[in-house]
Amino acid sequence: MPAYYYPNRMGRILVASLRAELGRDRLGEVLVAAGQPMLDNSGVLPNNLEKRFSFEVIASLQAGVEQVFGAREGRRLNYRVGQGTFERGLKDFDPVVGVADLPLRLVPLGVKFRVGLDVFARVFNQFSDQVVKISDTDTHYLWIIERCPVCWGRQTDEPCCQLAGGLLEEATFWASGGRRFAVEEAQCRARGDARCVFQIAKTPLE
Image (cartoon, rainbow, N blue to C red; front, side, top):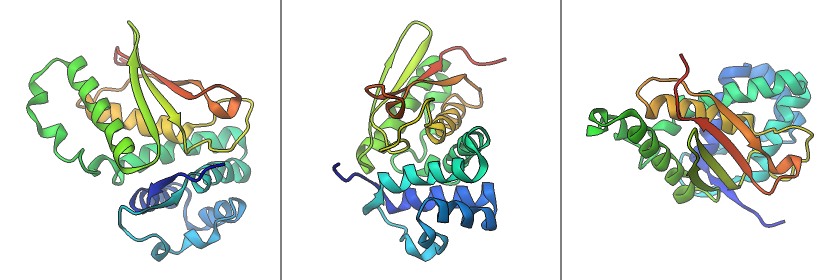
């Protein structure tokens, strides 16, 4: 299996979100379960854009949370970790900086929403080995991950990319100026699908 990576900075943000959500002791349990105890040392990952944080590590961390907390609770926590990952730094990842302050505030919600998704996808496509495409239907935007780090190498009975789902919910909240939208993983490579696909409702939740 070929090796693919996130930049170290994204890895640091992810580990920081795990620590904030789980607490240091429970994070230690997860890191041991994931076979990544060295990540408990914040100095392991430099704050740079070198692509050294492997997809295998990302997937193992998600699986480790499920192993420690059980599948149902683990996936809920991974979703929250994804939300925290966006809040703790990914939203400020170049070239996203400043997008929320552009004149997009003056354009219709749907246009701003789509532009925000395009910019967020460009972050992954430019700075990591993750491959994202965006499409849409009459009712939903489709966030299509052709090469997904979250479930990389995993086999599960149900979609398991909750980290990506949490990231997307917070990204759409940011892109829309504070509206919440339903986000659902409709396809998952770990479950046997060809790619991971998230459906994002075009109509905000009440």
